[in-house]
Length: 277
Ligand code: SIN
Ligand code: MN
Image (cartoon, rainbow, N blue to C red; front, side):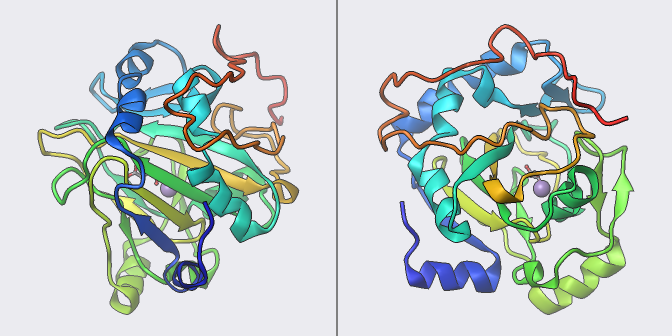
């Protein structure tokens, strides 16, 4: 899938693009049906909400679940990132965020590139998130919020939040957020399951807790230009991958046909030998 020039200029101006209902219900069903099995597994890739068994984030399912391994190679998700960076991309991070009914907790205001730079030594913000909704997203179940245009400001000062998130995250102060919102406002793209959002790695974003009776399961592919691969291996490999192999896309119908995919972590996470001292 290619972005046209109008979409490219909107992405440049606002820092995100929203594609309502890009994936069809039968494609989404294949993914959503796999989530309870993945969330029930007791492995370190499942990070649970504080004081509850609900999964907040599942990491790296593309390495041990066939439907998600196919999604990780989906041309509707991967090709726009290759187009924007003008080179192949690899998977820096892959997550299925639960934001489950009643239990899903907040994500503080942050830029992803802040964490990727500070923790992983990613050289430039030449990586982006491509998110897909597996549930309908509405104003009640904790939609992702963006401050349009905030990606133009580069890396904003942030503090290391080690307590309120799935993994330590560099989060932005409330004073700074108030100034940014006065300038750019807040948007929260909402829509049916199957909608996709593409957003710049410096775009400031957050989400509130989910007090509604509706789950808000979404998948995030963090795709990085291969030449911009991370230089520091401080975080566990299931959070910040070190396999910089370019992603090769499958055909567009890959969620509905059993294309062969490798599942190297199917029998468990390999021992991480590359953690920095
Ligand atoms: C994220 O910022 O990585 C996730 C936010 C969310 O799922 O609401
Ligand atoms: Mn984020």
